[in-house]
Length: 72
Image 1: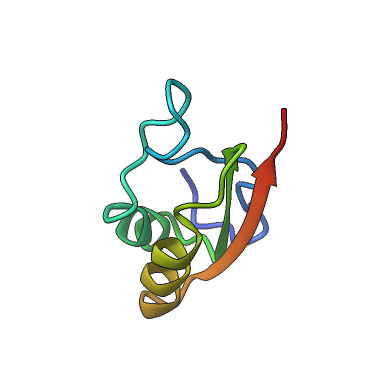
Image 2: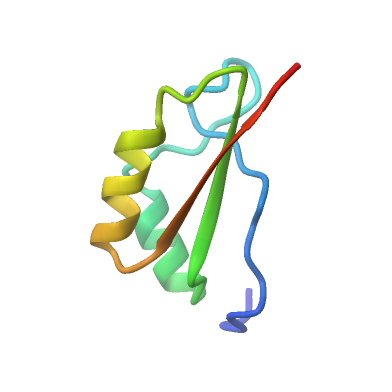
């Protein structure tokens, strides 16, 4: 992936989206930093359980957290 900061994932699911996401919140800040992403949106399905943990981890790594929720 290039280090082009114009690209930001606006739909990603964490381990809190049962049967849909496999992203571990602890690994996300490093992955975003390595890819040169200035921000990342977390849009788990039908819950926002990861919102606080995600926000703290991303902000601590200098990556802007964007909180969302996919409602079914």
